[in-house]
Length: 338
Length: 300
Image (cartoon, rainbow over the protein chains, first blue to last red):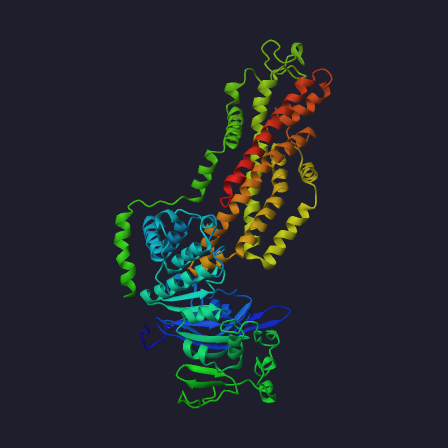
């Protein structure tokens, strides 16, 4: 499905996001670099507070400008996102990149019908009439497989179930044919059966419409379902990237390994789940060395003193760890300290 | 391939559905009100009261200023005086009809102005937040610290009597509570995901305020301000009663109550009539605002 073009759809270089307040500076995202090709799904996995959502919001410029200090290079489809202003930014949001939120309960305005909200967005972006916007809204609701779409057009968000609401949210995000879809844990608030339906729908739409997608989740199962490539984040840093198969079957970073072994799948009955000891570091005062170091079973004094480099393990496969065997049998690329 | 999927649907959808319609918020509210007979009835009464005040010159059987020493404090139904006469022999019915003009103006206009000013300040404070919020809300708190009647009395006392000053003091009294309601509602809505979602689909700050903030905040503000109308009528009556609002011989419900007070042992029923007018109007406004409250909460 991946259509290789010269410029990647999303190119993030050394993204840093700091939240500055009087009391403290929170380093939410540190030196994150990402690439997403056209028509590719990148899944960002990480626990709460690992900087997944913040990175996404930085990409949409949704962070409060006064408190969030963003540095680095963000480009979507060759456009420098950080340089966008006023009208360009408004056209970029929704037009180039669209976002789906975690809570379908609150992501739709309760006082407008679903059709109204989609039509309004379409009208804003294309300048068409409200009626044309409604026609488009109907198409979109049919596209996201909302049953009896015509009637649902006229429904208020509270009249829809969680799954339908999330579908309506997807329809809203797709309304202006974005090239990039950012999904911030869109299935977390849904129950398991609806979750898989929405995931399959999103994967299908993404392939049909040829969109690039960044999908944030903390659920490895969800990642396995939808991703082409996976980036694992920990304490605001990407600790491992690779294709979904590589990362989930052959994790290199101890954090990924720990995360995988702490899932319930395939465990013997009665056997305790292996949890990662300790808790994530305080983002106000990150350790100088590897941020996972204090919790890592393999860490030595070197790990705690110095930040490990990004070790290339092959094409688009890297891990940020000293202990990674830089030249495994599978990959032929050598160690390239970043 | 990407556009093909979407474009294929477009002509089909517009052919199938030539006239797509969605309910707007206000249509829904109207639809819900249509079956709320209680609210409709009291709304009708409110309209009747307002119309009777507007068309007082046509409706009033007598001149409200025409006094007659012979017919002082006559009971209900005495000669042509349907509701009796006051202490100067003036027709009570005519005076109540005319008095509605001032009392209703004093009830509605200050609330309306205060809704616009207070609502605007509150939305700004709630949406911008930070230091702006602090400044606006702390100033409001200063006014809020006084009981509303006391504040109205103090302001119109300082400005001097008269209808205009009375209305000004009432407006000032109602700005802080309305500002607070608007601010609370706005800051709740501001942090909800749909505002960020709207921003993520490219909405400008202005259109976010216009569409999403106003859409969600207008309901609570309107409900609150419609309930303030009856309060305003009561405070205005109170001001007139204290001699700070309307000056005699101008007919006004509060003022009538004040002057008739001396005759309470002679004609208690007549003395109560202006009070009944205030009471009925207040109750009607309150019940209508109650009905609006349930109709405007589309989530219920």
